[in-house]
Length: 495
Image 1: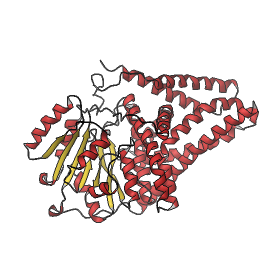
Image 2: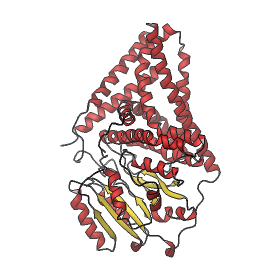
Image 3: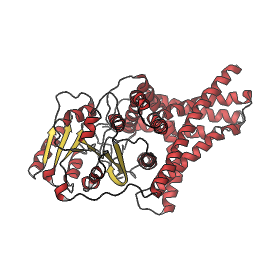
Image 4: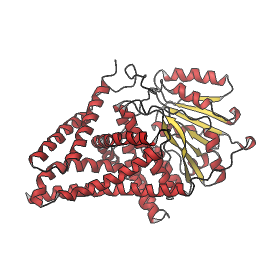
């Protein structure tokens, strides 16, 4: 029996070590982030004059976006840029009413002098990556801006981003920060914003400050066309074609410029199953890209530091796998601890990593927040939301672990889009929306069972007079219970 106890302890310890390393690296990015801004941030290039404005292709890849496509095209049409120097390509793979909506919009905007085209494919191969690859042959611009259907780009997007290509010939991509038009719609959207704000401040800007690998985020960015071609073009062998091409471009010597202070508004998933499909795609795609790009990364001429941080960036989605393992094995560890002579104080390592990640999230969501609010108000919201965010992240660990394992094992699955519903305020409703999932997956049932499992673990801890994992198990109960509840509830919204 002691052998089994040791196995349980070692598995838990390995998971805890990975989580701790992950959080400490996040803290290190925070150091680079602060250092970057102390040095003044990204140098502001001189604006382009009218005669110097290049021709730009704007690509809008869409698939069944009847609720938001008009909003997207209207936003692009408001660009403060000469009509004769830009073309709008709507890469429309839709199979529903969206096709007709786009046809009417294209006709209307053409009559206003816009160079706009609806591009349809006979075969939807490669999903978004396939659409982007096929459309490259029709792009006349030397620069290609890309926006997903849930974005509402600012009118000054092109004038703000293009100068960076002219100030540095090595610049291959300019990525802007995502901002959230429906952040305050629900608790779910607030928690998503909390997480994304870290990526679009401490992570992206920290990597830029540390001269590490960055990434194009699939949308709200603009590419030098030559960079895409030089890096080998869009490839559909991963679910995160944006991360894949980003790494390949940087291996070719191109640089990514990230603009934290220029926001591109977008709509967050407003229902749980949409969020889970998005998370699945990001986590599995990240694992697929790691499997594909780690060998060429380590064969490159990059410094060891850059290779190491790049490796941890590509392996970042694996943290959910270790959170899941740590949670599951923490319950039998309650029984094993007295037999192995493990003092509860040993687990304070987990609290140290929790503290470091808390500081990172505080900086991203309070100090670096774009929304003008009093500091006391932002801090108060953060104190309430951060524990709930931890619970939600832990609750997603089963779902995301499955995605990560499939990615590492090379199991192919289709690109599952995240539906958008033009949900911007509390007055908007999901009840009459199409695209909502009606299928209850086995994962949701398991999440409900895990909530019961960790509820039993809390009882077990009290029975054994060992409250070491009480907070951890409580967050897991809340997390898995909430994920299960909303997954089922949002299935029932469809009439």
